[in-house]
Length: 312
Image 1 (cartoon, helix red, strand yellow):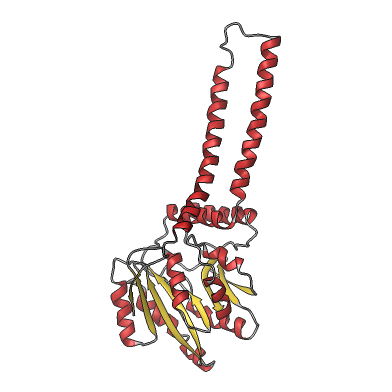
Image 2 (image 1 turned 90 degrees about the horizontal axis):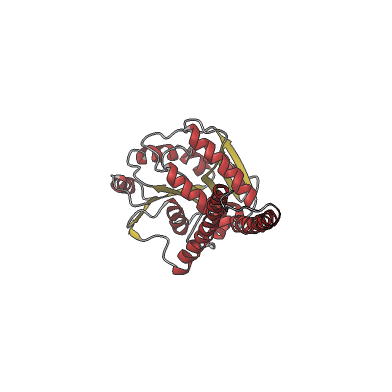
């Protein structure tokens, strides 16, 4: 039989563990009829609730369930990477534990790979029902901005929920960078990909772990990881304001020679505004360079993406 590895990153998901497992196993009959067996890899990202004990209960009931537990919270990207490294399946799926990624789509995803020849089947939401309007607005703007800046296509509404062939997974694992942005990595490696669309599903239980600030930082990581356009913007702004400054110098010299200013007081307010504005632009550009330097600094240190506390 072939093997399907299901990777489930979790962080404080005690209320959803059993519900997720039950929903996933509703597909067991279909996959067994196609000679495909399961392994389910829960990756605990340093949870502070009863997530680990409940996964251990599942392990006692079903030998196909595995647990990787981190020593602390390393983030979802580290969780997905750890699961991909642990997986042994001919096919590998990544799913969230909160049931916003419907397990019922797995048979259709498998058919696309097994019968239609795709290397990866990804999912995207066609709407953001249930999300705060401000968060939805900024999410849509992020996808517009990053697709203008980057050559790697990152689809609006894309989820991390996808089914992949072993060849696709091996390509992902070959990218060992510390600052990971999986939505970009999935697009960068290429291969033949199919998108499945579905209506947004709200969390079954619990609250989202993604605050607005965490999403903002994650968006910056994505832009820095797959585009050097901000550096080009900083260079362009530097050239532009050098030209503007030169024009102002010429204007001031011509005015002084032709009209004069005996009190030397005219225009001081506008000059202060210009100085503050240009200084702000300079600090903004230095900040962009600093962001790229910080990413390079983290890569050079070569720290592990995660540390495993338990591997059951």
